[in-house]
Length: 279
Image 1 (cartoon, rainbow, N blue to C red):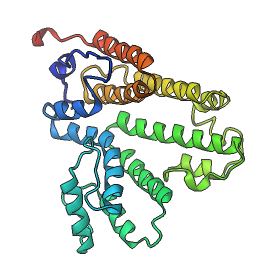
Image 2 (image 1 turned 90 degrees about the vertical axis):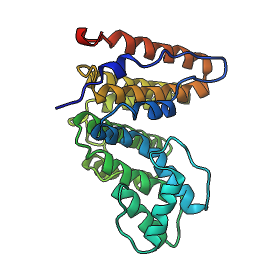
Image 3 (image 1 turned 180 degrees about the vertical axis):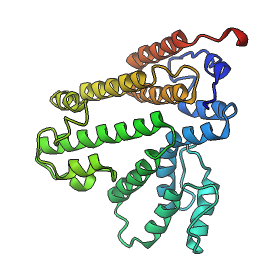
Image 4 (image 1 turned 90 degrees about the horizontal axis):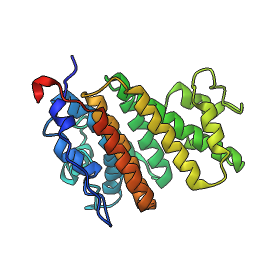
């Protein structure tokens, strides 16, 4: 049975923007939400934040005491302790996702340690871990996001007549198909109803506009696929995904970011109706 977070969802603080930055961020949500969630739902939100741990872990493997992104699930000390345990021969570490432990083992055994290669390897391991989430919506989101990113990478590479097979992330059947197919749609039209939209987006010459259209596609996907999830963990996850998009655009275009962020908050509030017993 799903947990419902009526007060958590309805009680999200009003968001105000100043001239320089957001007053509420993805990092803030992590600190506040985790106090309210049960253990199984915290683990689901961890899947969102683990991407920061991927980068943090690689940074610490490459440089002792490297500065890390605080949005990760684990502290620098926890990651450093895991690295030390693996160096001592441990193959599992309590509390750590196995894919992170396996990454340390493989990294320490890798003599070349090519930078781009390791980013891709870590991303593949991360997505393989996340798409096996027990929550159907969150699992589907990671599969969808992986597909979109891979297809766009392949389309861009084709446009410039560049090889891309080694840069395709993940071990899914779709990932494998993208690597080997020469078809315009990679032979995926029957399986992915958004492939035509991605091909049209790829035809847009303006890079910024392509990025905006891609984010809009993802935005609409999470809204559509979480339509009936009002007070559950899925709704909080959607809010996180959308908030991250707006943060990114706010850095690129402050005024447009302000508009988008206000639209998120208004949409979110419009969807929230507190049940009578909680008023």
